Image (cartoon, rainbow, N blue to C red):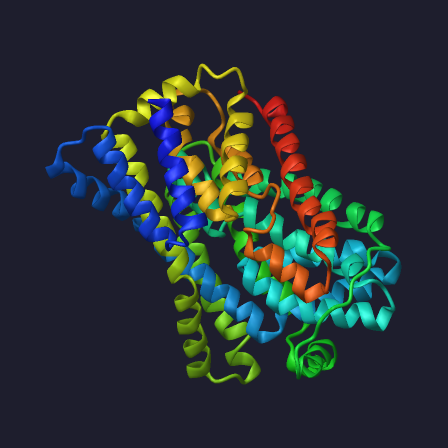
Length: 444
């Protein structure tokens, strides 16, 4: 049984990593192979896969799509640049690493990683030039902030999907995730940047890019104010955290508690946040409403690939469940002499190293670990974070983010391993240590 599961995961790795098969198709092919391998009745295979796709996308599609549109509002309005400039102005060049790290975390909450990278790198390079500081020294803390948000915090696709699969609570996961994120960010961002200050980098700007860099740094009149930018970007986090705290404070059921619970649902929070952002960052600043809607439509196109990955992972997970192999695997995994959180981290790390995608690593690991979470006493919120930490580990040449960082900052392969790969690995290790620490201090 264990050998068969390992072989199926290896098949998935070969299809995606070597064959360059689209992840959605690779997941479906692996699900079919699993169904035949475990002897599922032929008339049940298609039904099982359809059920898995439906259950996975049913509760996540709206959240991910709303999150993408909200992130586009933050990016296109210039709110991300406004946040960065404000933090740098407040702390000054002396604490610029702290300012960049906090900028990355705040901006990384609403923005998908790839969007945040493209939006913020021009500003990083401009700040580095004007302050006469090494680009990697300035940029690493900010990009580390984007990375920890991507791995640990909803509404990013992988954490949201893991919350659903493990039956975790969005508010609690967000609260615990912020604790782990801040600690991991300080180690993987400012501390590592200090050690790499002398790392040689020659950023390669594309033709015409210098103009956009200057605009990002100087066109204050084109960007929203600091209060507006911070308020809008942090609205989903504040709303989820506040409603979660209120629900815990209200011990007995009541109409008020029902209303607060309703408002605190991620899909409701993101809908309200999107409406607020549309007006605060758009309509009230004189931007055409129809233009904003067009950009939201483009944002939905950007998440199509993510939704398909989620759908394929759901199909594979459901075949594991319906074939009975999931429970058998869960029972075996519980005999492995490792803490369940360490086991989750390790499985996600292995898949991440093999495939390069944090999202695919997290979802594949979750399909294997779901029965472990259900059968053990491990906190599902912490398991979400442990898997997220493992999915960030050891980014290397099979990860598009590795090459983005290398090319934008003009680094050698060795320099990229010393900076980007070490940063991601530090975040993964420190994140796991924080999760294990939380498992000790949290009640029950």
